Amino acid sequence: MSENHNLPSEHHESPEGTGWIWKVFWILLIVTTVEVVLGIIKPPFLMFELLGTSLLNIIFIVLTILKAYYIVAEFMHLKFERSNLVWTIALPVLILIPYLAFILLTEGAYLNQFLQ
Amino acid sequence: MANGAAIEQSNTPLWGGGRQPFGASYGKLMMWFFLISDALTFSGFLTAVGLFRFRYEETWPVAENVYTHFPFLSGDHPLLFVALMTFILILSSVTMVLAVNAGHHMNKKGVVLWLGLTIIGGFTFLGSQAYEWYHFIKGAKGAVQINDSSVLYFTSAGGTGEIMSLYELVNGQKRPHDAPHAHFNTEQIRQAFSQNKNATLMYPGKEGQRLERSEAASLMADAEVVQGANMRVNEYGNNLFANFFFFVTGFHGTHVLSGVILNIIIFINVIKGTYERRGHYEMVEKVGLYWHFVDLVWVFVFTFFYLV
Image 1 (cartoon, chains in turn red, brown):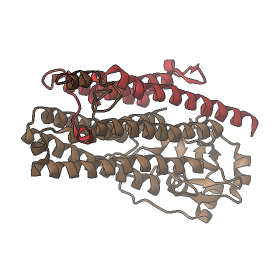
Image 2 (cartoon, each protein chain N blue to C red):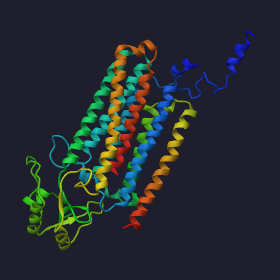
Image 3 (cartoon, chains in turn blue, red):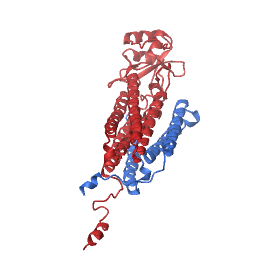
């Protein structure tokens, strides 16, 4: 049994060639460029208040999560792993991080309001 | 009993050992579990930044007033340099995937090429971060710290709320690009402030609240000049801002550095043919996971330190 420790992982199906890698590269590059351009010009019609911040910031966060998805699913190959591994990795992160962010940001706004 | 052993073999429970229930090797699985805990650590840091940013909204600096340098270009270029750093890290992630891909095909030359480029990308990123830190610590415009320890910028009372640098306050004009970075003492600044009747103070936060000239004048009586940044005070605003900047980007930089070291170790092993003899290049894949994670963290640091 001990020699099983050194067995390589089973080979999972992934697309042939390197075309998919460059496709993901262009997606990441274009999304980053859009973020930077929006960050520099800060279009006034995106600056209105929404969910405690501006619409522009929400767009930034959505685009960031999109980039994170491509890095984890494609580059880290998670998309091609068995679904039990995918959920073991994804669930703790998907539950704990939004929870943490919600608590801390809510408390920060509360402290700002009442501890002046 | 001859086929009894064979039956026993196929009836081995999935979690009874000798099989890979997740379809991933021990090492790869442990790398994933480490990355989960590291992801939670970084989200702890970034949400802590969020907590204090919401808490100190009035004095929390606006990123575009802080990171404005770009090598060989004069003037303010907010975001451009970090965009370049992001590009470098994404590119090094791509070369890492190509190295892993070459490993799957047992293509030693391909692994050497792409892994080598990944290492170069890692060093380039670290160098860029050193540049970023250098300018952050040196400072650009300068500000004053008033007696309640808030740091305020100068601005003109009738203007659009643009920051007036200490140089501009003293010399009456924007600092030409070839002029050296000047240091001012508190006495000089007080004098220049009393002569320049148009100058007043403003908070560095998003609202950029401007003070009345008379109020600013009374605060100037015991204000201290702040130029650059350290762990106690920084010219950009709230002192926690610089502390978090050093801590979070420093912690990420440490990850990049250890990633580069791991890459160099496996690069040497690849050249020596260790993985060729082992029959597979899974070690490249495992270190690759770590390297992509470093890129992933940077995507979030980029958003929450520079964009939002």
